[in-house]
Image 1 (cartoon, rainbow, N blue to C red):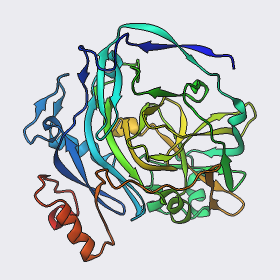
Image 2 (cartoon, rainbow, N blue to C red):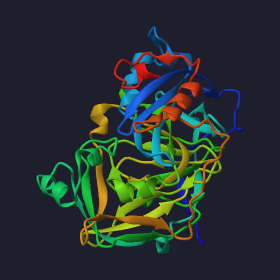
Image 3 (cartoon, rainbow, N blue to C red):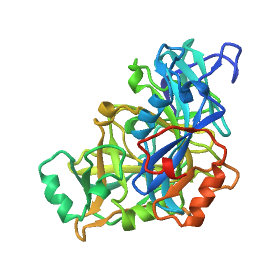
Length: 391
């Protein structure tokens, strides 16, 4: 197959040359209790800078403290579903990538994944395979924005409750009417494939890569956090929640599998030449790679399965630019099902530091286990948490 050459920033050197530096933190210092709809998670805050009671300046002169970490993580908190069928996070806050437009990065695999940064040196050409359009699944779709007047009627029509509408960390979700109840997406190897037409990139951790070339204000720099998607989470969302979703926003983000067992897929979409059509693909992110979601990329991650790190903004105003829609089948008003051909649910490994989580309906025994797991841990004071004074 003929290869397509694209411009990419690459540093000429080995994996961790002398002039590299660690950009994230590797040791958890304190726990920060965060409340989601269906429970609370004790987020492991890494590094003394983000967990300190007394504010201190970061390398880039941003004032950091435990209180600031609390406000940032509140914007990113998700505890949804039930044990075995939940999405929980942030389970970890690994730090910020400051002034990311000035650096290239590699990631050291393992837990926690460590970002190394490098000064920009020169541009080199990377060869990528052209995207194979036979991998696309085309669906008829009508996007109804959350801010439209029509949405109030649609919420009633599709039985959406306020709790359903909170099952996105972004405000004012809408509806995507899909012409079929089940969408089967095609499996393919995305490594070295040009995903530019979907406004996305897949990068190898061992090859220095850029995340963005756009200067970002400190409020929008990348907060590195982790989420656990349990094996039955997507099924729970389809059968009991708001459904699977797609979204697009005016900021980019990163998605990184933390273990080789972290599977599932991210859905990417692009507009078709025909009106009211979307072209969908599924990206299984290989271990040792990161998927970079560019600004304006249509994507959905409800179908991930495992432990993942994400880098994204936590600013209220910027997050408000997100346009999220839940996938609905108008014939029956049911949630749409998306599956990857030949895929099977995989269980999670036991050797990763799972989130410390307590669900609203947990038994006294489970609450006792939560206390045992966090016994002796240094909690950051959070008077806003419903669970803080009951641990």
